[in-house]
Image (cartoon, rainbow, N blue to C red; front, side, top):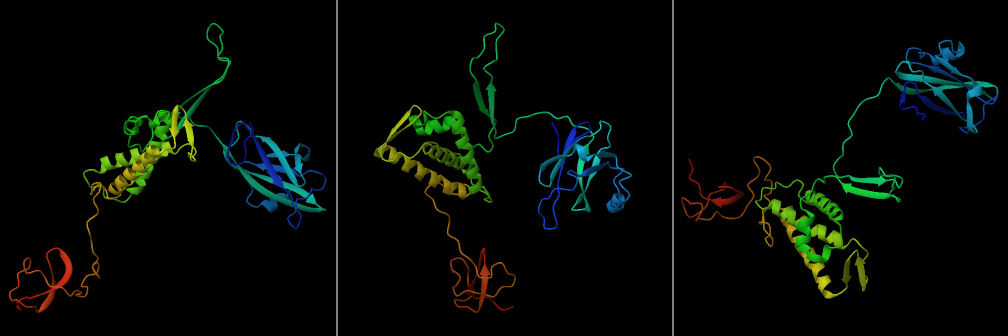
Length: 334
């Protein structure tokens, strides 16, 4: 198999191509039919290409005569060069030389010769689907062949993966009976990726975060699996051995799955710091709160039950405790 410019092992063939154009950039055939090509290894590559051309290429490592150049299209030429087995590895240079309408023209390009290969082990990566095709000609010791091509597939370990097909089937019952475990595993994987996206940047300090994430993945994957075929469209549809009729019970099931998904999504998005049905604690912004020595904004009074006043009046504005907001109160002058 011939190689191209980016990587050529020593002892193999390399295909080199060039396009000749006229002054307007249009492809044009060269005079005498074909150009000459001069090849230079790492040590022989000239510093001054123009001087090398004027001297008629005295330092060329190899020369490809015009008779060995193939014309693929007007102005488009190609050669196949066999790199010697003992060639110097590194960047080689090929100079293309010809005449166009009686005017000498040339240009140079480069290709990489590799000295040796490498040895590596083959391993299966995560999140991959492996397909094995068994030829119909495979025979046993008695000469009996398979007779037809057999395809076997399996998935490598998915990551992230925050649930399992068993949990999914336990939640949905017979609704998923017609869907293979491999398909459910793929749905769980994609739902797990979405769970990571919703919780990205969240502290995840809540005690039920892991539970919430698994719950969200289960309901999200169930919806993905049930929506896998075309929409019911007002009638019925078949999914393997599963037969679904468009009635209110199935519609209510989908609605309930969506509701549970959204409920657990809120918990995941909150880092497990809330429970289903609970909202986030109210918060407030303090004007200039991130600035040091900020102005004393605020019109409210400190609560006497929290901040004891020396006198039942006010003479200053200050913060107290962990509340960053300024409030009116009374401070003794020192």
